[in-house]
Image (cartoon, rainbow, N blue to C red):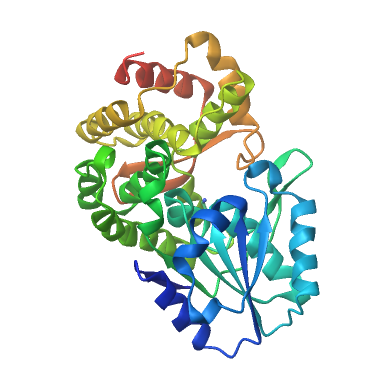
Length: 350
Ligand code: GLY
């Protein structure tokens, strides 16, 4: 089982992980931002002699060229099967670094140390690694779990508020998958003025929800699809925003997608309307709304039919009977989806 360490003493945690094994060389992968902002915060004796590999920041650099650069740096730095790669960054660094480590000499150990809330709650945990290829996101990759994931909220102090909110949407998703109590706890947290200590405690519960699901279905044959809650509509909103030339943060798309898919859950599986209303109020207050009219529905439906996770062109969603009670692979008709989008617009006041 993947070791998860929740701490604000990151240097100490890394030292313990490194000293627990006899690594002959340690490498640290950073992007140009985490090299400047985060690496100085985790400097410690255990990584004093580590070789730093720096890549450019941003999803446009999650490419074969960047991966090749990392392989080359590992090779030139003398990495062997007994070496360790520490991925210190957001989702691009942990996804690409994980793939570099999983494939170098058929696999070396790696540790993820996520520096954004979104990567801490999602990308860094659960063994999905990868890069974009041929115009498609995460087209190439392997499933390989990190040796350990060191999760701290101390890096989030300087994150823009929108980035915290973006990650928080994935926490809301985990809370809804877990239980009504967890859902309520998350709705009562003040994300606009987040206490990083309280957030660390919420994050621990949230990441463990994901870990439990992934353990039961590591290669996404069934239950792991539950983690797609909010993403069928969310991805369509993201694609539409990109098409309009006005991209939106992933987590915002997930928050709005959660509202639409909770409407569907209410329509198809009798999810409680009081919980739907509470979610909609929280999302409206913290994320605003993604503006659509009924003229946008044909394009949105088209994106959903072509979603990477759709089976034989049908729209498939993971929906909830109640918080903590998920049903994966629910087929949704175009009429159902259009009705849900109408109610999404009403709830968010569009
Ligand atoms: N991001 C969802 C998953 O890891 O399966």
